[in-house]
Amino acid sequence: MKLIHTNEKDERFLNLVEELDYGYYQRIGDELEKYKQYNEFKDPHFVILMLDGDEAIACASYRKFNEKSVEFKRVYVKKEYRKRGIAYMLIKELEKDVIEKGFKHSYIVTGNNNHAAIGLYEKLDYFKTDKFGQFKDDETVLCMKKDFW
Image (cartoon, rainbow, N blue to C red):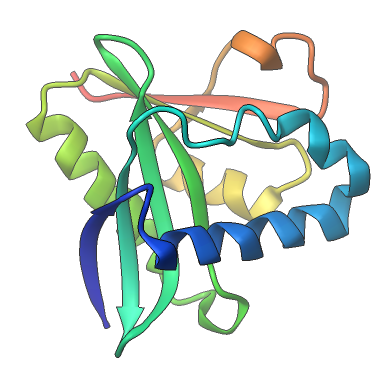
């Protein structure tokens, strides 16, 4: 398996995001629509893919949130590859890039009931923070933050 850096236009990334969204749809149904605009790739994203041979099996990305911060998005590992530390590796690789570029913080948003993701982010030293933007009054999500400096 190998990691590659790419961007939000990579078809392999977009295919994984489609799988991720389908999984969310199965769990929360039409409520997913309220996040559609937020999850569009209007801003440039730094993307990492994990490949098994030629197959993209996992992804993670970030976008610039403000001058000092980024937001991690679209962290996903195909079901048959889970429980192998791949999501952990992807986030650590994103963090390495973020630190090299001089950002001070990263944010990530996940569902309140996504206990596996919350546990992973806590293991990576993310902590709960105030909700922001469109999530301010959203009781179904949890906003987390990590400080690098």
